Length: 188
Image (cartoon, rainbow, N blue to C red; front, side, top):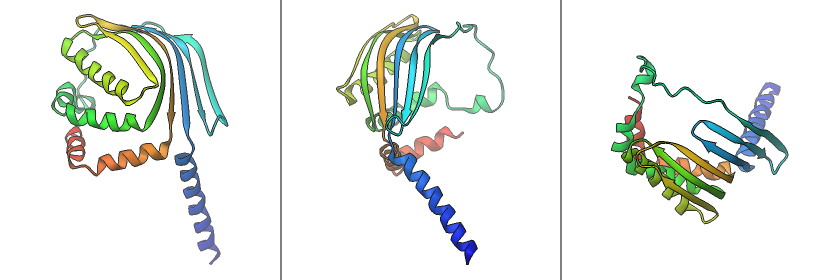
C-alpha cells in the first residue's frame, strides 16, 4: 500500500511540474544589429515573472565561411527541402500564422533582407507580412534585396509566450487533416 502512495505522489509531482511549466509565461527580449554574419547585441530570457533570468551580454560572432559545402549523403539528404516548402506553402503559412498568433511580439525591426533568389525572397516577405499582420505592437520596416544575398537589420524585440496557449494551438492544428498530411510528407 505504501508503494502505491509513493507512486501516486511521484506522479502528482510530475504532473504539478508539467502544469507549472505550462502555466507560467516565458519572456525573451533582444536588442542589436546584424549585418550578414556579424551580429552585435544582447539577449535576455526570463521565466516565472522574472524569477529565473538569463542574460547574454552584447558580443559579436565571427564571420562564417560562405563557401558551399558538398551535400553529404545520409540522413540529412532525406530531409524536406525547398521544393517541399513550396508545394505545401499555404498549409505551412497557416501553421506559422496560428502559432505566431499565440505569441505576443513587441518591438521594431528595420533594415533589408535578401536570399539571392527573388522567389525565395518573396516567400520570406510573405512570412514577415503574416507576422506583421498578427500584431500591432511589432513594427517591421524591412525592405527586400531581390537579387542580393544577405541582411542588414537592427532593432529591439520582446517576445512573451504562455506555453499552455501555444500547446493548445499546436494540438488544435494537429487535429486538422491537411496539417497531418503535410507533416506526414515531411517524414520521408
